Image (tube, rainbow, N blue to C red; front, side, top):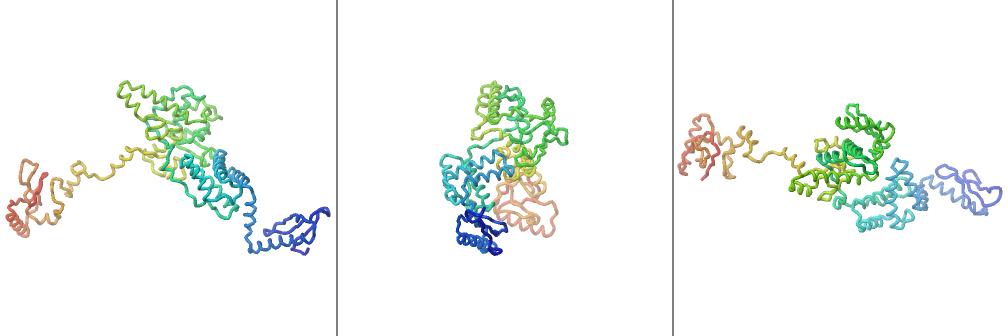
Length: 489
């Protein structure tokens, strides 16, 4: 064949013809024609060369071949490659397994075997079936996010033309909160640590070890997996300020962290770490089921707190309260991750700004810090109302206003249509008679200016006296009044 039109040959001079040509990307391609007829092999090679020329000239989109190859692949192979891609990005085995399992559940419910079998309406129906099986809305959103992440990966890797699941929206999980955590307050935390310090061993972890674990968890805000990774070298207690270091491989957001801690916690840790091995995790005996451990200690601390009440009435009140309960009357629960919520909530209650709270919580979004991990009570909200202005005119806070002359709390029962202006008060020399005065010393008091009246003032006085004679009232001069009521006729 001529130059540029490829070539045909047979291996060892026998068998089917082998076609060789350059594809549109410049790479040499070689493929068996599966025929021994030279004419048929020529036509097949000419077609491949023509297709390569059309793609090279842009007449045909070269990505069509990629989409076609991806469509021929089984869906299980795509999932396997997606798993490998997640692991290469540094996603943990646990998180990768959860994403893969959730996506596989929805795909199995569709009976999908190829990429073209994934339909938005069918995915929405599959998520609706999970909701019908009494799954929480938050759980349904987790499944939907997993399959949407898989579809987004397919689009970015050139395996599908468009992300058909991009427009699917999740549910409002706030309307179906089944597992809402509550943080512990300072009194509950103190009681929990004191009782756990003297508590017996729970699944190979001594009470003093658990008490120190609770102190570090509420003093740093670290998660359970991050606390397990701490070693003797993680604590820099002699720095200013003392910090706890967390490696990027052990942190959830995969960054090196230097978490500052209080000096009193650093002093307690310095004594406690003296007997710990240098190369082993300091919380090596920490169990896998941390929520069960914490709830057992909460029940023990609550039982001792109730027994301390000798008065029957006080004991009954403690029995009915939510103090140290692992599930309160509103359904909120306390698990090990609630200690992280306790840390963040106490930061916000202490007056930390949104940015400071976000940085200490090591969150990428301040909405997560303030809306999910921060829980304020009614007393915390009412405390902020002190910044509002006082509306009680008789309170001591109104005295500065009286001193400036902008407020006269002594006048009562003044009709809303009567609003004397300052210039009018200066020019008028008379006032309607005042009655019901609380000052027993004088019945008619002065309510005006101390300045002497000129000719204009005298003429104004005469006009005022004429008005009062017409109404049958006696004129009084301006002065001071002590809580007098002005009666208008």
